[in-house]
Image 1 (cartoon, helix red, strand yellow):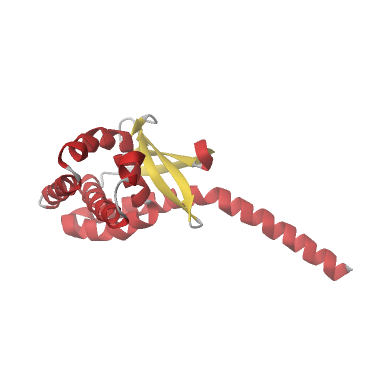
Image 2 (cartoon, helix red, strand yellow):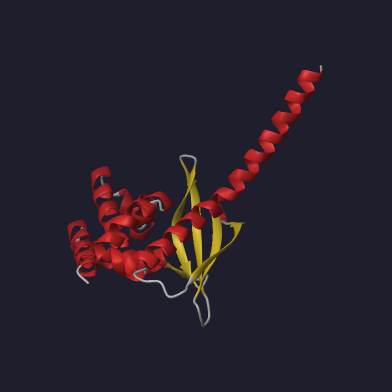
Length: 201
């Protein structure tokens, strides 16, 4: 009986710890992302644009659900009309553009630090993790990460600047007219053109 009781206690503790870890996981993903962003900023000038892009590519692939972000940016109805191969091509172009944008924006460090806040529930089972980029002087910048769980991992599906400006919504307003007017190839070409322009800086 004593062995059974010990087993039950351990099972309860394991279940409780698992729930705590699951609740903390979105925040842990964002903390890891912020740590890597600060690292690339500190090494930024030495790495150069290509080095920063190479550093950030696996970091962003781990933190973001680029396929979901691409689908949201294009819009559900438009995305459903694409084949799996077309969606993959667009997601790859979107990923290249995102990596180039991050590598350009996080190019150097001037004493900034990242403060990762708590995780809050959002619609449809998603989570929001609030962060701040605190400069060495001046007001901090608030960035909220909207996340969902996919294949047992929490991934970013949108970024809210100042808590309200959706990155997905801003890009949707820009990219959908191009897609509707000129088609998928033109949208991919635009993303690649912008990526190359950032990479050449």
